[in-house]
Image (cartoon, rainbow, N blue to C red):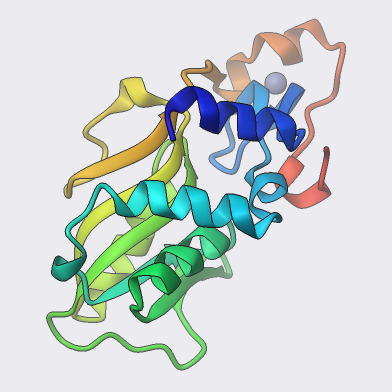
Length: 193
Ligand SMILES: [Zn+2]
């Protein structure tokens, strides 16, 4: 699939939202990608996972890991197609952790999969947890990169299926807030669509 086809998939699913949004990074933006609306259709998830898998050497990977919640569906699908174990990290009391009895064999090589990357904070925290548990993150794959200009934000190679270079703002310096027309919403937690 090319970038145009993937964006069309997002548009068809009503997953490209316009308004005033608070991203998981805390930054504000006039556009939001609700990937859950794309990935709710398993054929979409499979197609996107295939697209991502085409960018790795599957023989170099022992396990797949994703930061919850965003990465869960695409990460699980990538792992399913690769026939590799899938685990996830999650925040508890604000801190990314490995829970639910998951463990990582010493020296295991992990592919990190996320749906949408903006600042990359969740992915970096996820990789930190992997390292603390003895694993080796080898590559980051994401469906969408919202801030491609901020490349080099990980210390392992990363690739995304599409880039969407939409401006994001500090909450303190957001022009949409200044206009005061629309209160910002947090689509992840309120399910805006
Ligand atoms: Zn704002």
